[in-house]
Length: 105
Image (cartoon, rainbow, N blue to C red):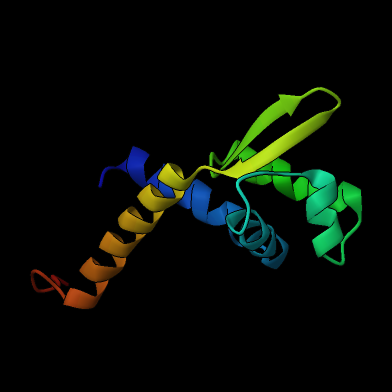
């Protein structure tokens, strides 16, 4: 992975670094799509808080936003989440494999 790839990975992982965003992903994963009100109904959070967290997930490219009249529909971008899983998994596999060469001091 190059520096740009690490930056993109870090940005997406940062979006997942809040427990509420993980809960929101869980709600979205159980549905094809939801409006913000649907997500609010499942969590113990204010509508404005859920909206802010959804925006972070959309900006990170993990959730898609589709305007639908006066509502906005949110859905997991399953392809983006699968890519994140693969790239982060590869990084962790590399870390677990041990050093490829000795450290020079």
